[in-house]
Length: 113
Length: 111
Image (cartoon, rainbow over all chains, first blue to last red):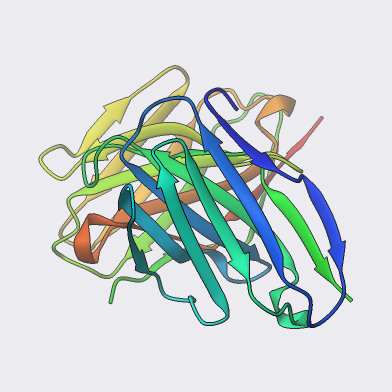
């Protein structure tokens, strides 16, 4: 996806270990989002950012933290991974809220064993 | 809060037919709506959007219809092609202008 990359694309980790997913954008968009996608639930917002060092919680934020030290990077950390966090994680970016759609990355498939 | 739902989890159509995918939203204050397409193993891709001051918008082979009275949104795909096979999501702005997404309809195109 042009202008937004996620890494890693796939990861298998053990329960209780910390995991960090990275989202990098080259569009200089102000807003960045982390979603998880699970069957039957659609896309659910974990955390979002509205600027450097400005972040807030979404609807499913428990067990996750984020950081944004630069405009282009938004990190999602699972402090101590659990099996319920096995999911596909998508990062999205937007220049403005309420009037623009989001551009999504290709996703990270995370499996916690 | 806002909830967005699609009416059918799966829709099967014949190649060349028109497809109609429906979506309902709950927040009467929602003023911006989007349809996304998601192919297997990929992230959602923007198809078309519409604002609440419109009731219809057309793109290339796609049309979005908005009925604010019943809080209903539909996506029409003309002359459906095998490449249209994917999951389609609608999204609507909710609290704080953030998008809330529906669960998706799997469109299957039969040859």
